[in-house]
Image (cartoon, rainbow, N blue to C red; front, top):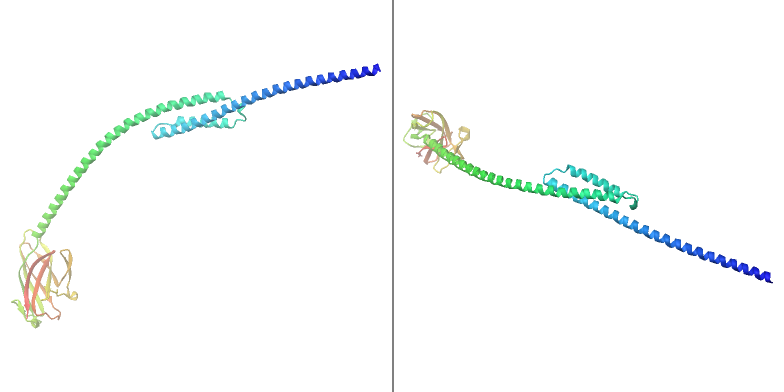
Length: 320
């Protein structure tokens, strides 16, 4: 009985020892678990801080890129050189791409990028000074251009005044020349004198006196003298004859030589015409009109003579 009791006591001792060992192992495991969790927390904190730092670096590079674009545009607008800035922008784009393509935040050397950012910011600050200098120079140039523009405007005004004065003078001279030319033209106009209208019968007998029986008129012969005019030029002239019946209608037949000529800017019908060789010391002319069987109306008829756009003489005759 004592033996069995001893065995029970040994097993109990072993069991207690095993439980004690298990308890100790649990304490050790809990300790290591706690330490590992603390270590993981520290690592997570470090990674979060690194990630935040990388994100801030990326945002800073993006901001510098935007500022650089503005600087390039502004300097170009001011007429400055931007080749170095474009090269810098290309390098900045490569840095941004390299940061974006990094496998993890932990693999990024933030200090290297911080140094790059500092260099970029220094260049931007220098470009601000360059832009201010360009604006100052442009202001000086603008002021000079405004002064020059004012002078040019004044010269253009003087030129315009001189031009107007010249045009007015030329206009006045042209008007005076035209007036003089008109006067010369009028003065050189021919004048028909001693206009006589004779009736010619079918047998060729010519009657004068200015009053004729209709049945004895086969043709009308108009004789006249062209007065001497030293201003008029020698040479051939077309003299137009118009015969107006008692009602004022022009006697004309296009088939027998009638036509039109210009008088006071309008086409005017004539009865007959004759080319005469004029001498400025005086000439004589004669125009014959054949009525071609057309009866003449009774009453007073009017004779008008024209040459070179002027009416040079007029008279009347009667038909009984």
